[in-house]
Length: 200
Image 1 (spheres, rainbow, N blue to C red):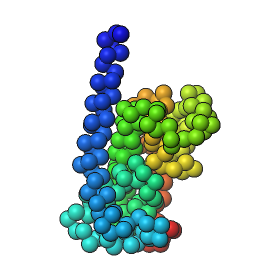
Image 2: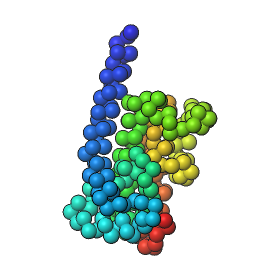
Image 3: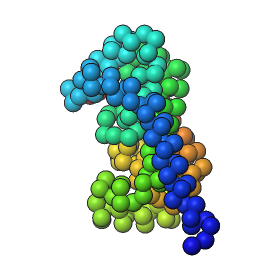
Image 4: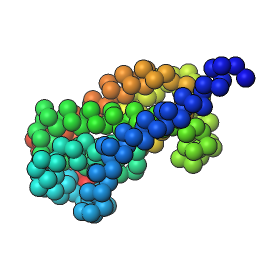
C-alpha cells in the first residue's frame, strides 16, 4: 500500500469529523427548535415559521441559518424557510442569509458523502437512478449540477449527497452550487418579502 493509499482513510475520517462538528454546532439548535415547536410539519406555512422566528429575537438569525442547513441534509422544505427569511429579514439580508446557509449545508452534505462513501449514501438512490446519475456526471457534471440547482426537479438534499459521490472536484462543486442557488433563492426570498404570500 502506498503512502497516499494509507492517508486516504485518515483524510476521509477527518472530513467526516469536521462535517459532523459543523452540523452539531450549526444545525442541532435548529433541530431542537423544530422538534419543540413542531415546525416544518406538512401543514406548516411560511408565515407561521416567520412568526416563530421573529419571536426568537436574538436567536433568530442562528435558528434561520440552522434551519437552512437542516434542509440541506434532510427532506425538510427549504422553500418554506427561504420564504420565511424574506418575510422576516427583507430582500437583502434574507437573500444573504438564505444563500449562505444553503451553501454551507450543501458543502457539509458533500463532505459527509465523500467521507462516508457510497454504501452509506446508496439508499438515497435506486440502482437505476444511480447508474443514470453516474453517466451524466461523468460527462457533464458541472452543467448537471447548475441545472439541478437552478431548476429544483431533484430534492435539494438528495442533490447534495448524490454529488458527493460524483467525480466532481470540490472547488467546482462549491462555485457551481453558489451560482446555481442564486435564482431560486432570489425567487423564494422575493415572494416572502414583497408578495407576503404562502405557497405551501
